[in-house]
Length: 197
Image (cartoon, rainbow, N blue to C red; front, side, top):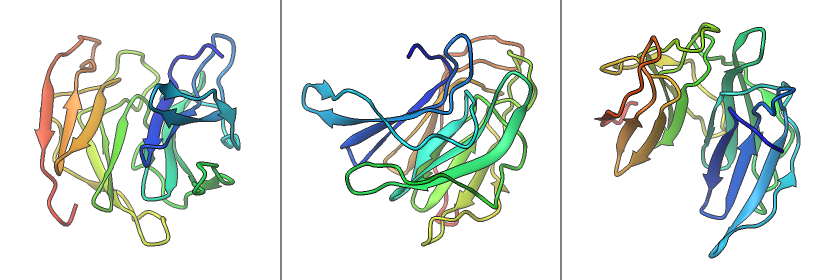
């Protein structure tokens, strides 16, 4: 289907997952999986749907678990975290609701997994389309894939929403997006987390 505000994430260089979004008429709770091949990807196959229909969440994969954090619909912004196990064939299990929530309601934020921690950066907590925050939070992922309470980290140098975030060589990178008020940015920020997150 045609979508905006959906998120994609890959796992083990073998599978890619597509989560949520808005198709112009309704918000989606659909989750799809495709297999990565040398020439691209296979066709999409439907997986277990999310408990809620939303767009602009943060989606991240840990060792063998996918997490969908926050997001919004046409009436509110959420702090809920859903998670599900990933089988060896890439099939996503039944979604569960985490006992731990985001510290604030967020949409347009990003998340990455690195060295046993999940990092959340930027986004917005209001329904204003051009809102943006500079907050950074992190949580430790346990051996059973549950999350600790989030801790506030060093804030970004500027507010950012709808940006990208990646991890490489033990560093976090936040790229582009827009500042509070809607001004688009071309900046790239990097940081190196400590061993304690």
